[in-house]
Amino acid sequence: MNQEMLAELVLQSQSGDKDALEQLLLLSYTPVSYLTNKILQDPRTAGDVTWEVLEIVSTNLSSLQEPAQFEQWLCRMTAARCIHAAPLLHRNFADASEPVSWEDDLKNDTVLSEEESEDAIQNMVDYLPEGQRLCILLLSCGELTVPAIAQLTGFSEASIKQNIKYGQKAIQQHLWELDERGIQFAGLSSLTGILHDAMYHNPDEEAAMQMVYSILGKKPPVSVSTWIVRLLTVVVILLLAAVLVLGGIIVMKMMGIMG
Image (tube, rainbow, N blue to C red; front, side, top):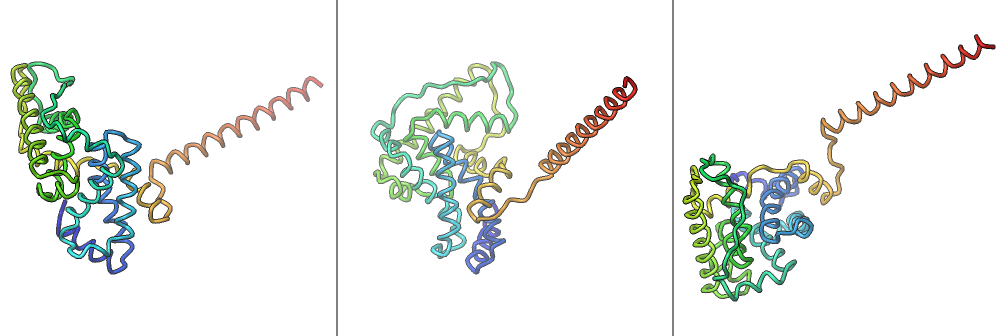
């Protein structure tokens, strides 16, 4: 995400520009939704937390004193709300070396495209124990440091580092296993880089618009597809009415002839 554009939108929003605030919330939806779903692994709870975070942004943006730090602020707030929503996330910090049971539908002797490779890496993160997954995701977003993650989670920096280490090691070992199956990955960067970039990929614009407009108390604009559906519905109704009228006329004429 363009940090300069974000900072400018923050400044405009803080000065009362409602259009800028709307744009900022729409841009924020994708990374917040991505993080909540990855951390919580529960779509319903993730949706609730995404709403909470965007609502906080809409009402508490004035508390952000450094507009250039918006992404970090957004990530910290998202993580804090996720931890609050699922206190059991803390449970797996005790045993960072918990083994991972992998599942995938990758075919042997396959060369994955860059996009397929990144998707496979993201899927691997889903199988990590909660503590490992949480720490790696937080490390990947908003340039959060280990001390910042420790402050958010309430656990020691040593525990955070251990979870990150074991999570990264588990994924690396699984990549070696996949290599033995003849599965080749293309264009892979660092794990944190892949996850950070994924936070902003494939935005669900319709879902973002529905949530943001609801938070702002506005009616979302009707999409072209919705207008087309509505138009087709009207056409079908008119055609049915015409058929019924024509059928009635024919019946009346037949009754007249018979009479």
